[in-house]
Length: 377
Image 1 (cartoon, rainbow, N blue to C red):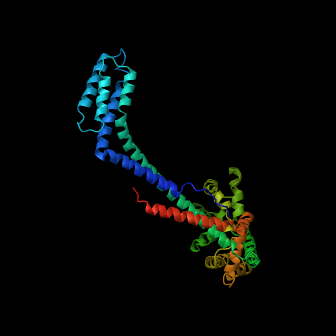
Image 2: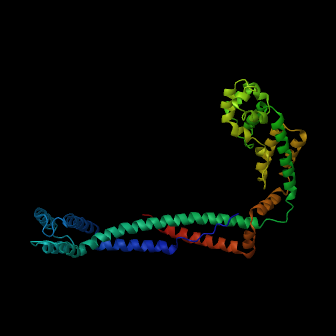
Image 3: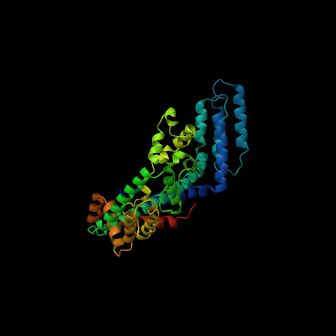
């Protein structure tokens, strides 16, 4: 089992800092008033848009018509502002600054500086929007960290559970019967694959549809139909696969319709060549008792279709393992031996895993409490 250690990317302090930033941003907007800040922002945006639009055409000895147009539009903007607009004086000062016979880029820059009080009002709205987004992103980061912590805690809980297993338990009492069955069923299936007709072999595989815990992929309908009809279907599968490698002229001596053979068998050659006993074998470490028992019962039924009684008996022996009083004890030891690395065993022995588990549980509790106390926007 791999160690999933990762550093914390967010803390309760980060969440509190994001909330405090939003509180300050909201307070700054409140100092102006929501509506007043929006009115100032609209006026400021309109003024700076004009400055940007005419800074080249209305300066120096350039386009006199542009200069006149700019002056008229800027004067109209300022005169149209409400008398009670906060920072109105800044707009009037900018208007006076720009009221001259010739304008330069320096005057436009000075006008922007004069509008600084209005810009500050506009920036309060921008900062509030940014603070809200920052808090939302911090919350998302906290939720991602909580998800990571859940995974890390689960992994360490499993390590602690595996570490409590009896690593000296005689797991060979499970392994040896399972390996004996796997060897026997593999030999029997290989023999059946060599000797039975391809038609009967695919019929066997198709029959496993009734046994969901015997995980064979169903034969493609086209190859099943072809081998059921064509004479070549009575040949063993290895022979059929050999034919697939023959030249067209040589193939005509062995099959009735070489074109149909090549079209059907050729397109399913990968599937046919991969048919083996793997879905009939039992993995290690074995499954929990109930699942292995149900699967072994299905294996008994399937294996009896092609193997002799000695192989079926070994399948029954695997099934009977699950009735042992110590099956869960032995299986748990087998899983621990299989999954625990030397490094993980050392960390368990030193208490490092328990310490990491305690730290992550505490961090999760802190973050959950902070997130629950934080009303979403």
